Length: 266
Image (tube, rainbow, N blue to C red; front, top):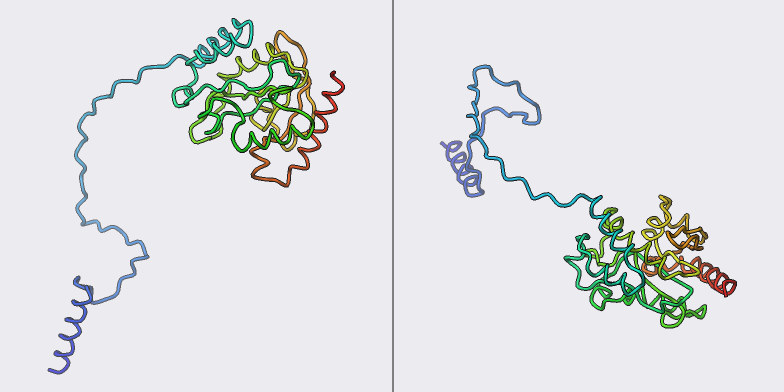
């Protein structure tokens, strides 16, 4: 009777602890796969009801048609104000629908130096000018060390004219759709020197797959339609230098190379 009373007290304690399921008399190794019983009835899944196909989405214009439209608009521009108007009226890039402003350019259109970055950020999208955020302020300070100011002897733009949401990296399609305007931009601007800021601008205009760390500090002949060859220097984007300030010494050498080339171009 004592054993029975002890067992009852143990059962009451287990129930109070939440153990309300019965267990087997013998232990089972649940980590081992058991063979299926031949007597177990198989579950038959009833045939699915026929599914009505959803209507196909409306097809957009092919990428080639968008590129052709961008090139046609760009080629028709005969000066920088006309090109700005063409970019602002172009609706072939999806980024335009989420951007606040079209960010075309800033600086002196007659300047010998043209700098091309990646895309507008949050500050640039809000104000409508390129390189006005933290990276732009760093760029201004860097250029000032070699006597360059955007209001006097520099002209600044980007590969993309609209901000990618969340400042994400532009897609190849977004870059490609803007390139006809960029090539025309350079041709109408007629700079003596082009500086490619960052990997996106460098890869897009030089058509190179090498990373910016391998191309930085090197001069290239940038072939511009309707203009010819223009010397172009690849360098780090200022936003990269904010994240990795140890590379500023390399950018200082690039600035000196720009200064020397500007002096020889005068």
